[in-house]
Length: 174
Figure 1 (cartoon, rainbow, N blue to C red):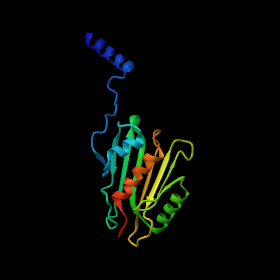
Figure 2: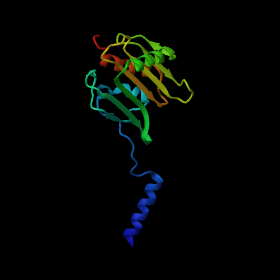
Figure 3: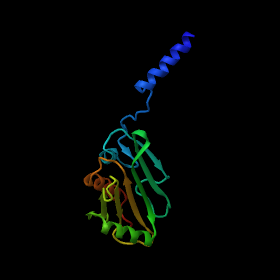
Figure 4: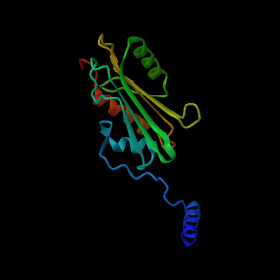
């Protein structure tokens, strides 16, 4: 009976004080998905996140590999804060991405191709960033798409993340 009372007391105490919560520890690696980890921290607005890497490719992707890089950053409560996708795409997707960049609120030229970023364009705190090479290659062109819902994201931090992807990847023949 004492054991049962002790267990009930422990359960009741933990229910009130959040014993054993799954609080995310600060991210301890220096890089994530082949990029400096501080870039994800700046966009997510916290050092407490986890990273899920999908796909078997690493930066820089090779056009013949057919792979893709997908990097998801989660914050407390399994919230997807940042989602990065990079893959070689067809000419129609490349053209669509160039159009998205040209219509974005914040545009930046880089040596690795144009970058476009919209932060809070729809009023929901979401951000979108795009990058692709400025010219078409018959072997396909790398296209990066970054999206997320981190409330601390700003244009500069998203721009830096997308720009880092562009510099790490580079363009075919460039």
